Length: 311
Image (tube, rainbow, N blue to C red; front, side, top):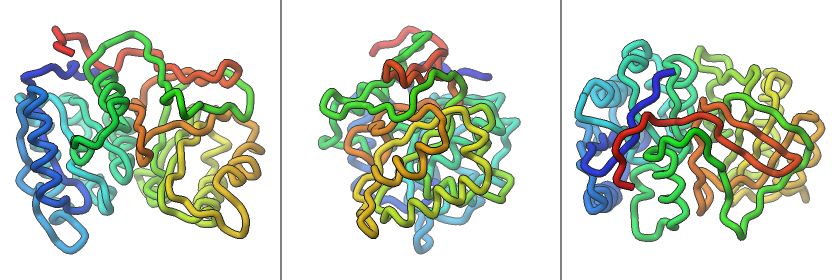
């Protein structure tokens, strides 16, 4: 698997909009913070494009992303935000070219369909972690620490830990090792039955969501079950479901206990990532160890190539 260079101060970060259009002030705030941190930024042509709830056509958004992969000055690609429409760009990407020009890329929400496609078709590790909108003064230091630990520290192993006040929880005992895939449940469901359907065979499956009632989450879980995704995976990590109201007296925790735990796979819950206030950096496609006997999730391979880092 091609491993991109670790990010360091002075590098250029390419900003793209791949789904819904961002607010201009959010982009300006994020760019200012990145440049204050010592990075250069390059805005894609369609960052501020607006076509209803999309930031330009599928081809335009895909072209912006491909230009960033083709630009040798760009060391990392950072989506401005998630939103809807990211899956539409997937058929327009040149995965062979991307494989030969691997770069760091990070995001969550609808961006996770891209992260998984990059792993499946270009064999590069991509991070479920911060987007440009997260570069603002209200973002917890924990999030920046995890982000930069993943993209700028080429350590052979890395522990994924929650903040102390949000403990990880192990539901089903086990100890398994394999690539971690997945991300936002609502977005991933949209890939079922397409060429970009998530492949969970021999993988550890990560799921999280936000602002969906529990009966809707159940519907998505059932679709994954019927598609064989839980049968194929070797372990399950459930992230938070932020602002997910209970339905018919059932909570998100009830859903996990009643419908996820019975799959019998090693199961860890309560991982702080993506839509939660605290966002651990999860390297999609990297080999990790899920040990629910000692309640640990450990990245077992370097996710960047060493350079003289200033972090």
